Length: 157
Image (cartoon, rainbow, N blue to C red; front, side, top):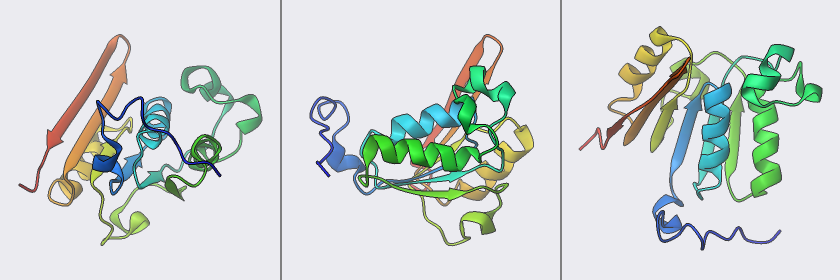
């Protein structure tokens, strides 16, 4: 397998700054799917995907899935797509379950946590759990004509 070339982005996002970055993405629908795909291409060390949802016919257009992916867990399909793009350059772990601390391991450490779920109560749980356990927390939401990205940087410092 050839090495992934990050030279075109290295000026803006130095790959050396990201090569030890571990990412958790909870929610792999329209937002989480795109976040995971793009974060994987940045050169991070690993991505952990958590979502208990499966691809359904009504997800195809708004979430950019393929018809043949219907009935499969979103995290598994997304992991396969990342592997097809990145080979073994990024380690992907999948948890086709509803998020709880035990699903990913209560001692699991992440540099960045992305909350891309469509439930405000789950967002609150994620933030309250990870606010002292990660360096960066991102809460991304979309609704109708509104898009928001809320981030908290260096929460432990």
